[in-house]
Amino acid sequence: MAGDIPDNPEARLASVREEIARMAKKAGREPGDVTLVAISKTHDAEAVRPLIAAGQRVFGENRVQEAQDKWPPLKAAVPDIELHLVGQLQSNKAEDAVALFDAIHGVDRPSLIKALAKALAKMERRPLLFVQVNIGEEEQKGGCAIADLPALLEKAADAGLGISGLMCIPPADVEPAPYFALLAKLAKESGIDRLSMGMSGDYGTAVMCGATHVRVGTALFGRR
Image (cartoon, rainbow, N blue to C red):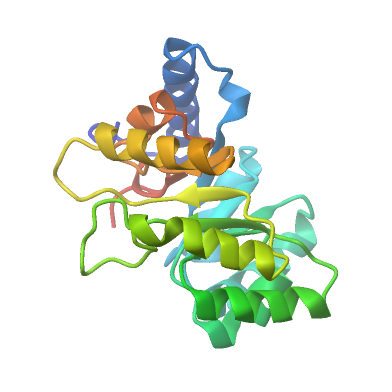
């Protein structure tokens, strides 16, 4: 997937969509059940426009400030663009994130739940919220510990937050399927039906394991 990357944006987008469709069919799923989130972080507006022109409408950023600088003019021109925040969110940026993003993939701690609940109470916007799970129990990665997930979901419910999905980033350089399967199991046990998992090197595997959202950057924008 991330091996032979076509040299133009339209071809890269078509290739990724074809792979999603192929793996969805293999898993007995509908390709339309998988949302492709084009990870546009660090790429400027000029790099993004060809993908928009080719029909891509869902994009992901990992910094609130970068998204605030880049996306308002693009969204003004193409109102149906959907923005997802895929990086860690500082609690003091919760209100800015709710104002700009249609989905937040990094809910991972009680303090952020409190900040998001406060922001949502002030606004009419209701972005999709994904709890990030530290699926590989890696100290250097963000995310809620697996053992703490039930308590965090309970805190979110108590705060009036509807959690739409779970998100994970499996450990690097290992087979990701067991980690994706574990996230799917945790979601099912929690009554959650959206799964944000899979990136450029493993999104096909993620689709096979039930991903509803795959976060693809390099395979769409090319290597830096």
